[in-house]
Image (cartoon, rainbow, N blue to C red):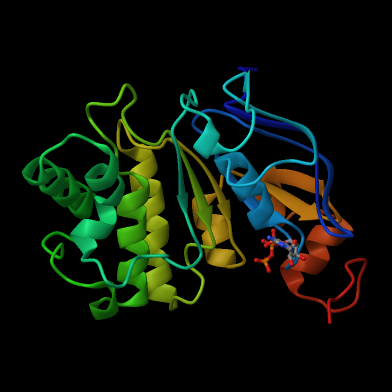
Length: 261
Ligand SMILES: Nc1ncnc2c1ncn2[C@@H]1O[C@H](COP(=O)(O)OP(=O)(O)OP(=O)(O)O)[C@@H](O)[C@H]1O
């Protein structure tokens, strides 16, 4: 098989005495849509934050396109692959307009003219199905619209920079708190972005919503007690006899997974 785009080798991560990840191995291949599922507090978001370079491993290694990541993303000038992250909360600046939010990094760090940034922002807003809302403030948007704006921000790129935008997107519960129809819109958008040329063809998605698991992932890993306990394709969700998966997908209180609280 090809070299993985992202690889975690023997990664451990603790917060105080809480060992969240325990010698975890994980590979994400180019063009793959990986779903990460598991009970609350098992470290799914932590995996995304490690891949994004927002936090450091305690032990183990992270490779991005075969190159070992050293330190946090802010210390790494030339990560070989652009990695964008969409957070659970859209995490927009309330005092800035949609356009200023999406173009934030370019306004801060590029030499591009405001007019050029505005054009680029408008293009991204069209891609996420929200043309013409650049002048609105986050408070004027619905939750689903805010999520889409955060997608636009994650795929924003500087055409003058050597690489054209995020190649890998990390979605942390992108449909949490949305009604079923708004969730479908987001799920479709995730797949649409994947199929658009030049945008992120590879992504990892953390979600608790069953429709999102089924509609946005190709391969799924089930995380529990710091390790990948099961992995398979979406169709195998319904056929697996794995006790963790059967309990988790049925929502049964009784089973090998200890119920928190
Ligand atoms: N910065 C931090 N400081 C202390 N503890 C943390 C920190 N970040 C995460 N944790 C703890 O690590 C564990 C895993 O958190 P994480 O958010 O990765 O889990 P998760 O599987 O994404 O959970 P959920 O499904 O509830 O969102 C939790 O017990 C959490 O309290």
